[in-house]
Length: 293
Image 1: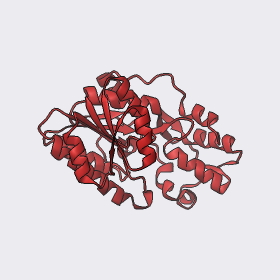
Image 2: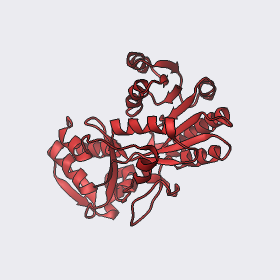
Image 3: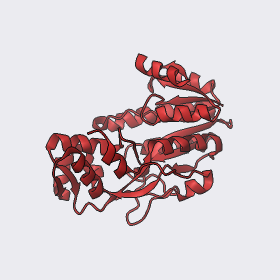
Image 4: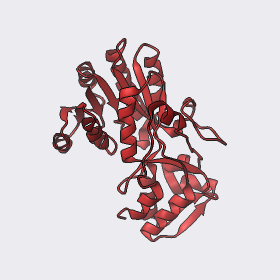
């Protein structure tokens, strides 16, 4: 397949490119910079220059592709409503081109969009929270209803020894404030997956995914925030402290909304439907222990 990939030079997209090529697909990656262009060429991909607000470029790329994987997102949490609106327009543009065809569209979301207190979130749970990417899921559901073979890959905290999703921001905050913190007893959990396992799932979703279905890229169903904070504390050699719920917003800033939530999630249905089995790659705590602080 000729696959158009947005976010092709990003943390996850740059891992998807070689997975696609190794699976026999041709990759056309969206790039905004010369550095991104050079990286894609070196990886064996073709390059299309542009960004998510260039809808004509997105429309043309989708029209000339056998499938689209949409990983790009404007990660500006200070104005995430604008970021979500940009993402929604991009998804709708892909939907206009791919409607009434069997060409797949894979859209990226996050496991945190479905808040299910007291149990693991599953692929069957609809988006119901104010987390970013909810608009992305709603847009994907709408175009799937209009005949687009569109599905969603929900990501947890995606990690290696360089980045770890929202945990990357916790590390920066701990470095800035001189303490690594969690909320309350720190037993609320965040799911996680290694970057390479996440990349493999995108390829399976492209090749075997069904319209309107959500897939969870979850290897670890829930890592306690206290353990994450302790690993950060060891790495930075700073104290580890608990913050009350009232102190969370002041200490964590925009992360205050996320950091006290238990957002554990399962990938059992994804594994059953796609045959995706997370490999024995390092878990989140192991990657945190071995990263270069």
